[in-house]
Amino acid sequence: MTGFLARLRDMVSMSYGQKVFLLATLPLVVAVFLIFLVVTSQSRQLAEREIQALETQLIETKRAELKNYLSIARTAFVNTYGRAAPDDEDAKLSVTRELAAMLYGQDGYFFVFDYDGNNLVAPRQTYLIGKNWSGLEDLNGTPITDELIRIARTGGGYHSFDWPKPSTGANERMIVYVNGLQDWRWAIGTGVFIDDVLENVAAARADVETRITRTSYYIVAITVAALMGVFTTGMFLNIRERRLADAKLKDLTQRIIDTQEEERGRVARELHDGISQMLVGVRYALELARRKMGENGVILNKGIDGLGQAIQEVRRISRDLRPGVLDDLGLGPALQALTDDFSKRTGTETEFETVVFRNRLDEEARIALYRIAQEALTNIERHAEATRVHMSLKGHRKGALLRITDNGKGMTWPQPNRRAISGLGMRNMQERIEQLGGTLRVLSSNSGTVIEAEVPLTHMLSPQKKTQDTKESA
Image 1 (cartoon, rainbow, N blue to C red):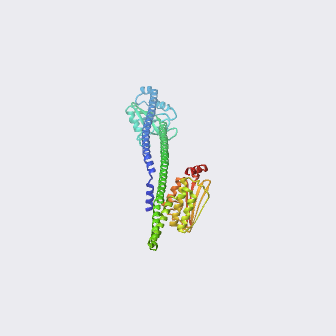
Image 2 (cartoon, rainbow, N blue to C red; image 1 turned 90 degrees about the horizontal axis):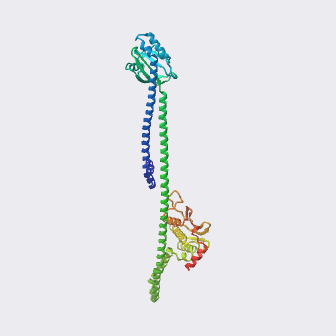
Image 3 (cartoon, rainbow, N blue to C red; image 1 turned 45 degrees about the vertical axis):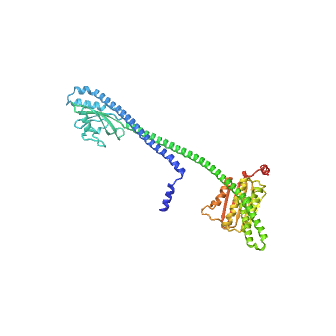
């Protein structure tokens, strides 16, 4: 449970860039979603109104058509009906024959029910003839016979219900127009199936849904494109700002390093030219006093020896802060002096190997490589417990390479990646080499540590420039 909560917390915690992207995109997504809902709702409402208008128009056309059909039929038998008496069976038979013969289209016909519910005419569905159909309803429970008789009694009108289609036998929606022959107590009418109208309406609705779906895809595509645009722009601005920040940080780091070197040089000069000279003067005075005191200057001898050690320590500190040999003779002699002093001070077997650089490295590279070597030897002295150290400085086609190896106990790496650079001293080495555009590699194991600092070729001075710099310094 604790691991799950930790993973959930890691998922919830976001970086600053992710939070900015979320704040930029969330309102856009919400706005697009609301626009999509409004557009979809309005489109459906508008389409539904248009479909209903179309359906009404088509049905009205069908109704007008039915009314015309029934008017034509009445014209055909009006003379017979007008001269006949209410109980004239011959006239009724003649009219039923005329109506049965009036077929139109594939499914069109006329039907007749008397007011008692008996079917008298049904030419396309003869099984209805001669039977009483009072109380007849369609599959949906809509009354048929009784409603038709009611409409006929009131003067005529329209009725809609589901009825078997003669050509297919399937139940389809039908609209009928019925009128009444009150003298004979007949309900006469005709109907038309509107399945084609319903199919057109269904097709129109399907087309609307298709268009809405297509519009949804367009909106989603536009939203994704907008999000990609926001993401790309954010990434571009983030990369640009990060590059600017890295450049500013690099400049700041370089200024800090330059300031440190200037301050070290100033302190080294003060120690060498000021405090060291004063200590030497005091020592000369004490030695002169000892000569005058003769054998009684034993205690003074101890003070002179301690003062001599202090002078040596001041000179060592001054040399570590800013070795004069680095500026006067170059990096190779400075590293040779550094390794000699390290071997003398610690008793560790130290070997230095180099090629003749002839002071070809620029000042920044010389200082950086010297400080890296200085830091590496300090770490070896404090932590490695090494008995042998080897340092080499060589040039190659890509630049200059400083390599320091020892046979100590290696470094302790808290990170899983053994190539990681950790510790304050190691970070200082990394920052110095990165300022030059170089690389720092650290390989450590139980059998020792290898440190490689590589300076690019851009920090190698040409022979002409080197000669010019030498003349200027001279």
